[in-house]
Amino acid sequence: MAGHKSLRQIAAEERPLVTPVAHDALAARLIARAGFKAIAIGGSSMLAARYGLPDLGLAALGEMVDGAREIVAATDLPCIIDADDGYGDVKSVARTMELYQRLGVAAIILEDQARDAKQPGDAKARGLVPEAIVEQKIAAAGAARSDPDLLIIARTDSYGVEGLDGALRRGERYLKAGADGIFIPAIAKPEEIERAGAAFRGTYQMIVMSEGGKTPWLSPGELHGMGYSQVAYPSYVVLRSVLAIESALADLKSIAQGRKSPVAWPDYDRARAVFQDAVRQQQWEEFELRHGRA
Image (tube, rainbow, N blue to C red; front, top):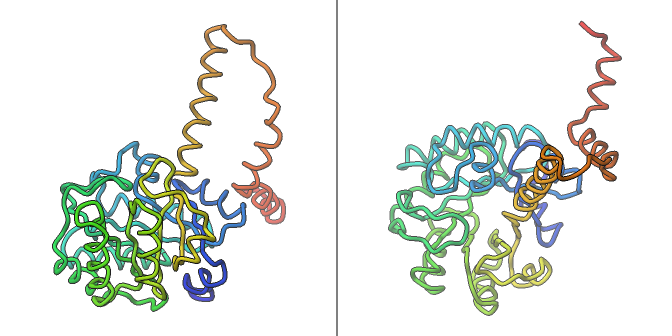
């Protein structure tokens, strides 16, 4: 991230930093084109787009890195990456840090869900790793960090198991172990969101807004006022993309079966223009003209 603003600096300017989640390189380009200042890369959306898999601990580190590499390479925006539990013991955490730092990510999120009982999104955790082990992993991540601007965000899924007091206690321990920020998913009450925000105000605090999730839908401005640095929207883009593809295929199926007559799509020109801009077609064509065809 040399020559770029740190994630802390961007979040301080944006008040808060709002991050859509990119499920592939094209989505990353469209997020940048829309004017957002950073991108989140979540396991659920990327695994679905790349492998057709749910986020249930099925993917290994190498598969996650391969998918993240394409997204990070597609944009100059800083990327926040979901690193699950670090994919093993402290050695695996150090290896995870090494690989993601080579990609140039701006932050990693380490969680305390037990990998063999992993649940996606803000579903209630079925198993938590003991705090002492998570602390060891956070310390290992810090020891393996070569970029001082890279943030280590500790995610605790303990709210649904131990309540807010348990989540706050874990968060305090993770910060003492070396985490730069805290993320507590699935907080179910506005007053508890505010309490958690106050408890960790001044740290890099992240929160997720998921439609249909347990956390009440609050505005970024409200959340920033409560102490949150970053607000991520994990399913906002990918779920709308799924319905758009489903609708297009249903239309095409109707045409194929003769139940619907082919008609010109009124949004074709606009869609094609956005698509070509996102893949930088004009720049590549101009490059070819300047340098000639081989």
